Length: 148
Figure: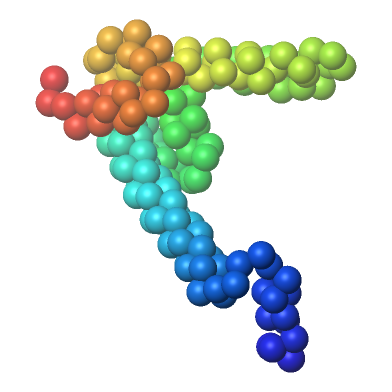
């Protein structure tokens, strides 16, 4: 049965099956590398938002560990702009307006981060720097673990 499943390798233009095996091993190795790198980034971001939430004296800093939405929840709580997400949800319900809610959500995210940075006594304009890859990790780290 296993031999029958491998017969498709005979139709490949490569005479050496070792090349295909090496290519598959390379793809698997890259997949593992991306997975490990993603976990490292997730842990760093969660730790940074956890520290920021503690600095801002939020009641539940553990929300930082919720994948994807935890940091946004903490930025939203630190911003103290509790009615804005309701406008966003209403925008999703209105036909043809829902198309623009992704852009609006991006603007809200910048505003929430602006207010979050101000809550931990950092310049609010750092939220604009959060749009730049790699720089956003540095800004989070400085906001989370700097002494001032």
